[in-house]
Length: 192
Image (cartoon, rainbow, N blue to C red; front, side, top):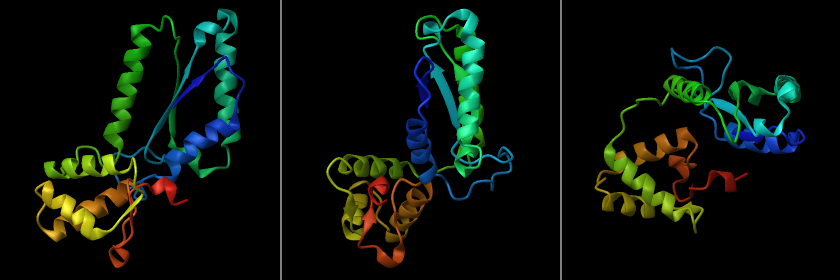
């Protein structure tokens, strides 16, 4: 998540992005042995950009104010537990050190997510890509349609299609219930 530091703090904007992450959050948070205590999946690293637009003598103060405003705004909200770090970058001349540090933080946080390095069948990625293309003009599909699509991706057993749909549901990529398989919502954000 990226914010320009030089702009006025906009709680509505921050809420919008964090709510998007939070509403699709993994419901099995905390089950990973490696999970960060009191944090939710997926992790959010807030990156403030535009530090080059702030006078150098005010930079540290502005960074602190920005962090405090976000923390204060989210103080009593569960979604605050997604935030794992704040980074601040210049649009013009961020050092390689800070960019490398951010890259390492992203990698460390990714390793802690419960789905990290979870083996999935390669053909699932093909089906996932097909569904992604359909999201451009459809929001609901039925099981029969997805089953046909799956067979074109070399997924020929119904139980494998169901496993794929349950996995995608767990990730928040779609909404699937076996008992009402005629309505598989492939754009979960449209359901709210």
